Image (tube, rainbow, N blue to C red; front, side, top):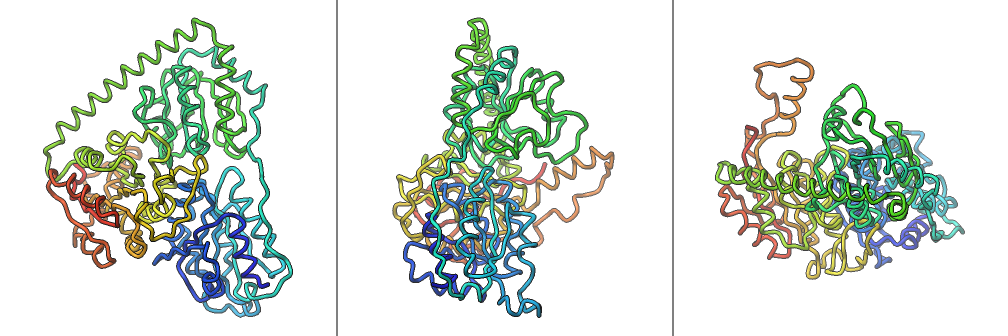
Length: 578
């Protein structure tokens, strides 16, 4: 057999159903052989960044390892930004790129470069297959490392001559690897003891709770503690129901802001996340003075990474939360439990006040023109099917979106990690491929993924709503062609304010923080000269679209778009920065 055969059989043995890619000459061995493997579906993108972004969201939505095939050095370079986002999102992926013939690499042929060095900074592991005899072991290790906690992308360079070399080494099937350690008894005892000594505990939750299928366990723990649940500043999954009385909001992006949000807490429990991803520097700890800090993670890498903790534990998230709940049953006395119930009641009252305040905000913004963001989100929520998967990259509209779409289960939501823009449109492709069939629930490793239907089978597909700002959309607009090519049931909503609104907000913060106030305008942050025409762009790539500037027309346009059960685009003209 040849190296390419071992590569393809490695994919099959590891349960791969889809390869996302943009074809090129050095990928000829793979492309030529794929026709002989009907269980592998190639999803073509018109840009390598879109292929990587789609594979990342596919992995996060399906629980399978995403596989990407890129084209030599320029293609890998095009995908690096999305690869960084995938690393930050802990998306398990095997990213490959064709390499030039090793017999002429010393002569610096066209498209060749040190691919391993290019990918290494944004991957967990980066390697090049040097001969067909090592293809079996390299691919086995690639899948293993990608799925070792914390999940993340790995990179493998595939020289064209190595793919065509003969070998007697067959592909290696994966074993059943039990990676989640059992909760440590001593750590549980110490955590329960510190919780018993606290009177105002809070919880900060990351994506790992959703990935582990442990949301119900977290709900039980939060209710037992009478603790509010805060989210990371950027979240990629919904790890706690947004409508729950104890759900708070996303934390700010600076230590002082985080400390202010958590003020009054005497114990902070961190669960499964990157604590904390900041944008602005603030001196001091992000935790309230005197607060004890506990942390549970699925890998040692994330535990106490940025800040010291009083007690930390590495364990499978679901088992850890269930065990902690069990330990607290006997550790907490009746008086503590009564105080926890009182805290729950106070949080429910606070939730009611917050909801009323938002409804007042919505009422004031209802009739504004151009259309206000609260109105847009209310109309989107009203018109979106209950079973839709939400892929969100709304950025400055995210607060209003979270108020309208509360994401009750982890399979409803996929957000953009890493901070690099352009993920929404590309990610919607991967989500739609992963979420085919009414029985398929998207949400990563926590759910079964039965996605055997071909990519173009939209009849039984679960709908996807992709919400993106106009600036973000232009980073990956070619994704519309892939959606049309496979007739994926995605409704792309483009929020068109003709500006990089988030940059204007951040420029305001910069001027304030660095005492650089000025009367200057916002430089190079407007997109209105000329105005971008997303309906026209979509039409050129085979996706019908409509532009909406009347708020009363939003719901009808969205309902019609979903009714098509095929890709549609709705451009909504919204207000800019006030």
